[in-house]
Length: 448
Image (tube, rainbow, N blue to C red; front, side, top):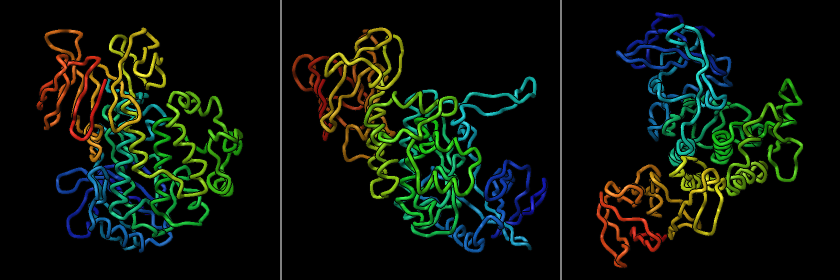
């Protein structure tokens, strides 16, 4: 592979030149450079042709990707191809990932290395989700990007931790490695990090498809929640140097989930996989059940893997079950709060009671606390909008301590007031929380 030099000009396929400013990093397919093109900074991925089975086929597919355009604005999509050099080398330009996003690599290891502006020394800076809400929203966003890709009839050929970029404040997500996206069931011989690659693809028994992507999706979601690899446990650690044969064994023919309910021979190792050990029992049973199914039945039978709709329903529920205590601020899932009865939780830290409300489209009750948001997809069963806030629990400005629900949607609701009558509640208006409260959102009804 020919490395590019600072100041070198690289011609683009349809005119213009990009100027190399510096190298950003290197990976399994080549190097990435910061370049300037048309007065803007771009990332240039420069490919090492020796890493590809058929570099001409790869370039042809990449050209099609550029021509098709991104199916969703959350993909870091290839924009421009460069001309091929005399020795066949070439690259592609993508937009730069905003600084507000952190690489998933840094999130998994809990830090990134930065330069201290005062001392110019390299120091570690913590990289952690600031809120449970952001973490769960990141999971929902990852699910949605996979759905958008599959709706366009495409799938991933290659994924690794570095493909994901996350805003730890909001849970917003961007996904890279889009130069390795193809039409479904097209095999270009590109293999990703073993942990993301479906066992049947590792063994060469299947082509990239939705089913192999469903496996990769389950891996990504597991890593968001548990900060570890679902197949890397005691058995993998025992093989200190993973040979190609070991990879085929641990991630293919003998793949074993670290939390397999009937086989504990590949359990997480304390001191190495502490995050999985620490977090596994903090999640409700339906979360653990989903991953158990994905990495037991779903290991050998691709049809048993959860699709995007199933994962979205699961994570929307998980987000709805976050509690933030109004008194002490303790924030966690309902599974870690004491349950007094079928309608009330108690904070294990300060003893404060947290009420719940039942939505007619759910089999579970949603906790109610100051700042709690209700999303469009929760009050409209036909909506896929998991980001728009339709309602919020707020404190009465004139009567501190008195809580109510504000209508943040564009529609008029009906709510049963303490006088026993139903009243219209228009956009921007609110109503008090009380034991006999009933709400008619339209397609969904709720009751305290």
